[in-house]
Amino acid sequence: MLLGPPGAGKGTMAGGLANSAGLAVFVTGDVLRAAIAGGSELGIKVKSTVEAGRLVDDETILSLAQEFLRTHSQGALFDGFPRTIKQAEGLRSLLSAEDELRVVYLDTSKETIVARLGARRVCPECGRIYNVRFKPPRNDEICDDCNASLICRKDDTDEVIKSRYELYLAETAPLVNYFSEELLKVNGDLPGEEVLEIVRGELCPA
Image (cartoon, rainbow, N blue to C red):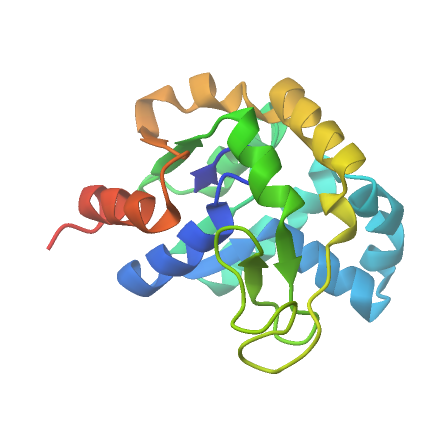
């Protein structure tokens, strides 16, 4: 699982590690946003919570994780889950004695987080993520892959970024101590490619 504040680079890390280790990726935010876009019962339930940058209730998230593990028994990579101690306890209850849990903690400063999230753009068609400061598209505000106009996510406004970070400190940061025995701590202020190589070296040695 990947642990770190919003904007730490968990999404980029998830994609790179999934390719290296052959793991299926459970991205909490993507699952919830897809439900909202599809107008499902779950999407209607969580829409206002997600767009305000608040956490969805633990029971809903745990049920999604349980279903994902049931259908991906060969290994899973969690991005954005768990986010609370209760979710972490729930995750442990879902694992068998044979399962190995590894936790990558991206230790990232508030300054880096604000810089990344404030400049983040997303393609509404294919979901590719850009940063107009650090990883811009070839053409201004246009996706390289499908030529759609990029958008700013509703949870990437200054007010919501601040709210999400404060919520992370209160709800999710305690997981660093909770998972201390399984934790691999990495400097999340480094460029994403460097962080990925460090983690690959630790978890996927040649």
